[in-house]
Length: 80
Image 1: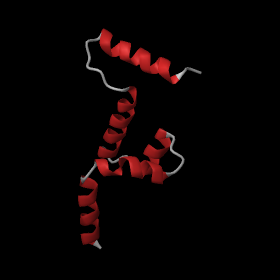
Image 2: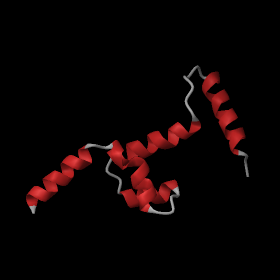
Image 3: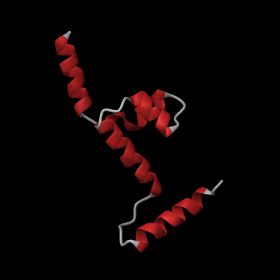
Image 4: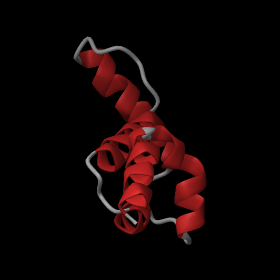
């Protein structure tokens, strides 16, 4: 097991050594999740990947990120 602060410290050093701007390690998780949802990976799969206990948790945190999903819902309703 690794302490979370060790990972954060090493990540900060990793970025600095490569001349990259500072971001929080947690931001990588958020960005990856955003990209998965934009690629239309099903929310249930994203939930499992993130390790959330329920889909509700994943939806509350990330469902707002892709406004095109709202448009797709509207298109789906038109087809009914």
